[in-house]
Length: 119
Image (cartoon, rainbow, N blue to C red):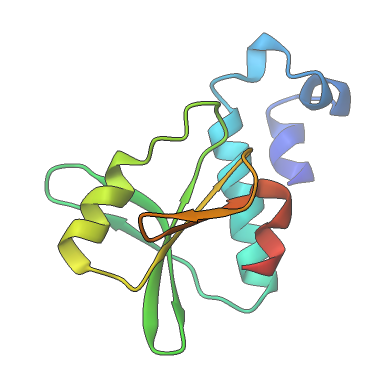
């Protein structure tokens, strides 16, 4: 994560105070952070994209089941691509990481970004 931020020439204060220059980069930072947490937890991470362009950030395997994971860094946490995946493949549940609190609705576990290590 540090190398990614250094490459972008960002300082800690830029992230803490969310300067306007990083708005286009927040999604990439959040996805990179989640990928690191999943890898540290022993998961192999995969990516899914439909023929029509719907994308799911990560798909992991847990106990013989595939679990789709969507990462959202912005205030808008709608996950249209995750819905496409769920409608197509009918997983037991999906995980959505965002700035919101823990929850479960419509087959989606909502987990705050800071808790990515515990999914």
